[in-house]
Image (cartoon, rainbow, N blue to C red; front, side, top):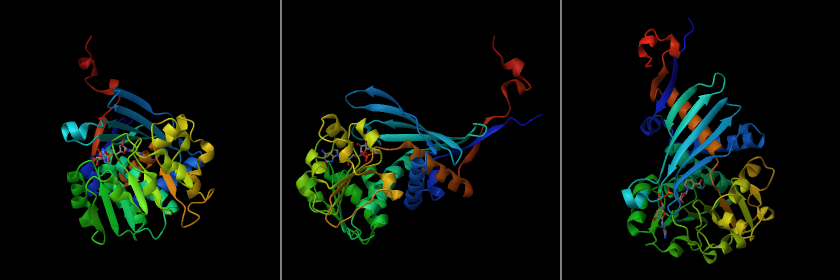
Length: 352
Ligand SMILES: NC(=O)c1ccc[n+]([C@@H]2O[C@H](COP(=O)([O-])OP(=O)(O)OC[C@H]3O[C@@H](n4cnc5c(N)ncnc54)[C@H](O)[C@@H]3O)[C@@H](O)[C@H]2O)c1
C-alpha cells in the first residue's frame, strides 16, 4: 500500500532566530536573486486579496501568493495590519504567517512565522536600493518613525554603508525614540545616536540617508531638509510633502505599476496628475540587472519607494526554512497519516 502521510515543518519565530535566520545579508542576497528571476519571468505573482475591516483605521488582513518557478515553491503570506494596535493594545501592528508548498505534488512543506521575513524584506529592499543609490561615503542617517520597520532599516543600512557613524531619530514620542536608541545602540557601538525630541527637522536636516517609517498619513518630511547627494527611503504611506519627490533627480520604486495602485505619496501624486511613469527612473530590479544606472553623481537627490512585493517575502521565507531545517530547528507535524478512506476505522468516524 502506498504511503499517504503528509508532513510539514512548523517554524516559530524563536525557531527561526535560533537557526540564525535574522541575517540581513542573506535577505538582501535573496531579494536581489529573486528580483532577477522576476525580470526573467520566473515568478508567478497574482493580485493580492485584501479584506479591510475598518475604513478609517485600515485594519486589514491580506492574502499574498507567489510562486518561485526555479525553486519549485509556491507560497502565501497571510498578513494582518492593524495600525492602531500599538496605541490601543500596546501590540505590534503587523503579524504574518507564511505557508510554503512544493509544486511537484502540491503538498505543504512549511508553515512558519512570517513577521520576521516580512520586516526583513522591507529592510532588505531598502538596503539593496541604498547600495545602488546612496553615496558610499554616507555618514549620517536620519529617521522619522522609530518602530519595527525603522529598526530593521537601520540594520540593513549599516550593513550596506558601514561608513554611517551618526543615527538621528524622531518619533511621535520621546519614549519611542529612546527605546529605539536603547535597543539598537548596543549593536552599533561605533555610531552616535541622537534623540530628536519629536522634531523631524532635527533628525533629517542634511542627513546623507533619510528614512520615513511612520504609521501617520501626513507630509512630515520637508523638501528643504534633504540636501543634494541625499538618498531617501520612503516606507510608510503619505509621509513627505510632494516637493520632496519633485526636487529629486531620480525616483526608483520596487514596482512603479504597483505604486500607482496604492496610497503612498507617489501614488497620490500619480492620481492627482502630478507625476507619471516618465518621471520614474527605474524599478529596482533594473538596477540589479544593470539595465539602468544607479547613482551617477555625488549631488543627485534620489527617492526610493517600496510598496512591498510578496514574492520576495516568499523567497526570504524559503531561505529561512532551508536554514532552519539544516540547523535542526522547528518541528515536523503530520497533516495526515493516510488518505481519508484508508483509515482503518473510517466507517465508525462517519456521522450520517
Ligand atoms: N513599504 C512596505 O513594504 C511596508 C511594509 C510593512 C509596513 N509598512 C509601513 O511602514 C510603516 C511603519 O510600520 P511599523 O511596523 O514600523 O509601525 P510602528 O507602529 O512600529 O511604528 C510607527 C512609527 O510612526 C511614528 N509616528 C506616528 N506618528 C508620527 C508623527 N506624527 N511624527 C513622527 N512619527 C510618528 C511612531 O512614533 C512610530 O515610531 C507603516 O505605515 C506600515 O504600513 C510598509
